[in-house]
Amino acid sequence: MAKVIWKPSTLLAPVPAVLVSCGSVEKPNALTIAWTGIINSDPPMTYVSIRPERHSYKIIKNNGEFVINLVPRSLVRAADFCGVRTGAKMDKFKKLKLSAEKASTVSAPLISQSPICLECRVTEVKPLGTHDMFLAEITAVQVDEQYIDENGKLRMDKARLTAYCHGEYFDLGKKLGSFGYSVKKKKK
Image (tube, rainbow, N blue to C red; front, top):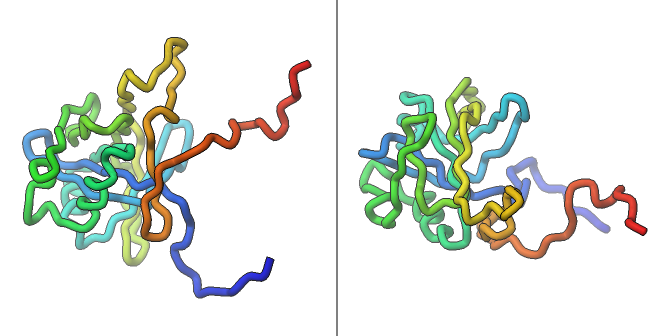
């Protein structure tokens, strides 16, 4: 396969497009983040990278808490809107009819319409250039009970989660395998 060399850039894809909520239940704000991921298992840790000039940056830096709300297909339009509009000039929750819900371990609100919400407490802020990375411990996870089957297994495939790829949103599709399937012995 012939390759063309491009200058270094941010072409890692797909990535999750998540709604990060911050502030309080009384005064919630949300922004869309595609630069996030898991960085550690024990303790469970994540990160979000945010430009310092963003309205939510100041809120998260001051409060030291945020919630990562996973985005199902039904919230893609809201996620796109929250990525291009500022909460400094409007109440995005009110405009988009999002419901702010009390979290269990942080003061930042959950977005009720999100099927899976990760409550996060900032442990470190790393300036990186255009963005600062907020490293955070995941202090609780809230899952909509409709995505837990009768055996207690989380069925994320039923949540219709989305991904972001080079300026476009995608509905996650067909399952291709499960962790370890390439080495799993076949049943006789």
